[in-house]
Length: 87
Image 1 (cartoon, rainbow, N blue to C red):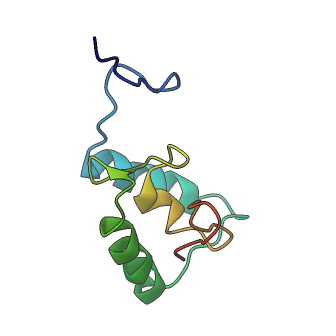
Image 2: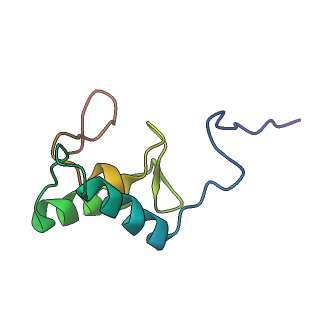
Image 3: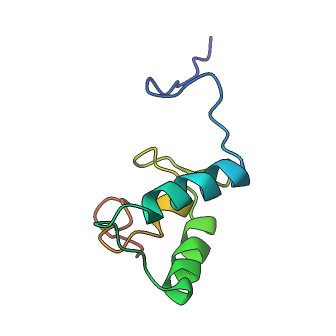
């Protein structure tokens, strides 16, 4: 019998809509201590994430469970890929 690996931290709905991502980034933008990367760097990071085999549902990083569209936007953030960060 094959067993499925289940993320213990996930809710019933693990898919996140584009609108939910936009709203989360908008909330972050209102915090004075949060800094975002330029649009060019953001797009470069997203392209790298889009080509990564550890991207699930087009939104979720399997290395850390983050929403990549949010993580890629943050200045102080990095790719969580082990040993060799992709960005």
